Length: 526
Ligand SMILES: Cc1cc2nc3c(=O)[nH]c(=O)nc-3n(C[C@H](O)[C@H](O)[C@H](O)COP(=O)(O)OP(=O)(O)OC[C@H]3O[C@@H](n4cnc5c(N)ncnc54)[C@H](O)[C@@H]3O)c2cc1C
Image (cartoon, rainbow, N blue to C red; front, side, top):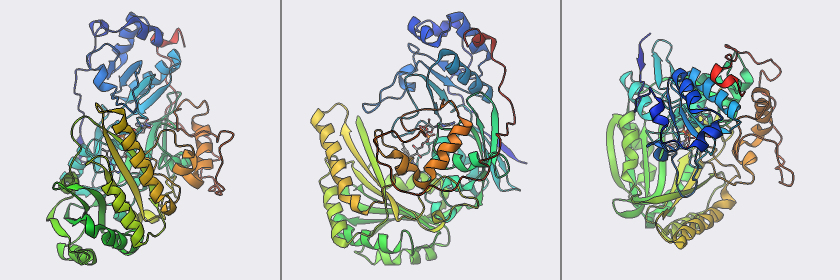
């Protein structure tokens, strides 16, 4: 079995007492460890421990004006044993924690004021060509994964950004240019390995811990355990035809009308994957459709012929290339935000038809955006996304036209009014679209403070997901603002009938390794 492995460590992993010199005493108090005890712990830890006062602390805690946390420690785990130690440390110090892989949670859910259990040093990728499978460690990002798959001319639906980590992306669904052909990233999962809060290891697949297998695909990260690796089914795909279409804004309403009518939930071939953006491109606000077709160029051109006949858009990209290169390059057509800008993001699923006048109103709203970097994006669903894999999974957003997202920007160093303007433009534009949205929200574009997030993210899967959560994390140790938890009193619950319990719900947890014995450094205070 050919195996290709990445293990990239950006900094020396071995640490010494001198590393803790600049760390304030309050940190040791919070960890309930002396400096000597921490050094002893670090000797067993294969990764790196970053604490306040250390030179990398401020960049590593990743903050922005919308979320600004000061973790007591960032624990870069290099092996599963490090994750077990990190979980023990959280228990010992009675600190909350959150998991982090690619660190791309747009709501900042992968950092908090307790511990950050970071898996980004765990970057192994094993490809089994004969079985068309890959086993991918949870710290792997799509830049590395696509590079490895490209060598083998194999494929997995992945995101548009090279730095997005598989752990957060997969557990929340995972949409990409080829999802219409191969489903969401989570639909391609054959099994997962997680470490539960007590440090025990579980494998969840179609034979073992089947309820957890169902829940881990769409149930959203940081809910059941620390995801360690994912086993994927791969597809044969290498070169695709890439295309780009650009309309001036005057042509956008007709094109958007046609896109919804004939290119989203139904109509277009599954081999056609694309995203549409009202955004600045080549210095002009415009409508851009960027995509790829898995098949000959001539068939791809035929698939988009009706679009090209609507308002005579410019063909900005027309090239056969590898998926990996096109995936990296297609979105470069759009003007990237520059300067010290901060993004507000909201999204919703479009599931009802808009008339031409409604599209015109949206285009007019886009013209009023307070920042030239503002973007209204459309991620078309349909085709393979409509059908969950056999046995189903917890990703519920299936029968929709597209995920609509709006990115609004303000200058971090600008006046408070510029932030208010960005927020109110976003609110007004979302309000304009509300009659056409189905009330659900893609959990990979989470919104802090969203009152109905349980229904919005999980719909009919919420109740069975909560049952899986109670079984695998009975102490609710994996806890954050939007983790799975009962509906609070006073919040109106939607009348959706819950899905049936997933297969395996009545079975006991099957562990492949029990919790490790308490490490002697931590045992005293545990
Ligand atoms: C620039 C950018 C581009 C994006 N493009 C796309 C796209 O094309 N398609 C798409 O579908 N989404 C996209 N997203 C959204 C992306 O899917 C989510 O932000 C996703 O959660 C990121 O995963 P991550 O591992 O990088 O993030 P993280 O912030 O590390 O994690 C996200 C969530 O998962 C949890 N988590 C992380 N690691 C683990 C673990 N090992 N075990 C348990 N829980 C864990 C975290 O606690 C957090 O709650 C994009 C986001 C950004 C910022």
